[in-house]
Image: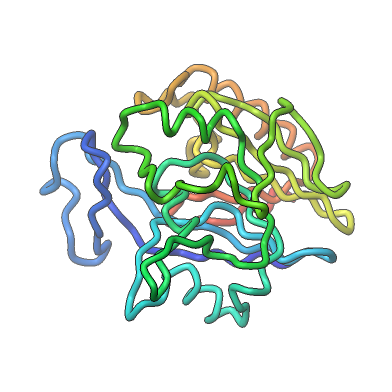
Length: 247
């Protein structure tokens, strides 16, 4: 399998849930508001023997009318129309704002016209039922009625025989993770329950998680299993190590 990080940049984020661009060469984290954390925003493309996958869809930024995630894919030689599956860990705005866009007629459409989207049904319902700056519901409008969207209900399941999904909660109540097994390789994408390499190696409880203790325990479990089985980990918010092969 081929893994392509689709970095949208480095940001600080604080309790307001605003993502403010950060230049690691010139900006000072200490000058940002108290409690700001430094993160990368980094969807992934994974090319398997059967599909071109996109894992989460980024912040939805556009330049000259082109989505950044589309531009990043194009730079890697991939047209947005070639993407066949979009796997969503959850629908917080830094992971899902690139899920749709306004076309030139001002009509909202899904960003990947030929892809099937896999979204947890209760996460979508939760986004519309929750008043939170973490979700931008207008960007999610129409997902439940779209023929391109598969709404997942089972706690665990397998897509097309090789992509496993599992409800974890932990970061938000209906967060899910994905494992991709193809040609003897195993890729693990833990979304925001496993967002950075360093968190896998420490007993870290994040205050921003729905259930920080569960997140910590899951990370320890996955790290041990991944080391034993030779997983390749994908870290959505890691500035230095987006891909970590444990073998």
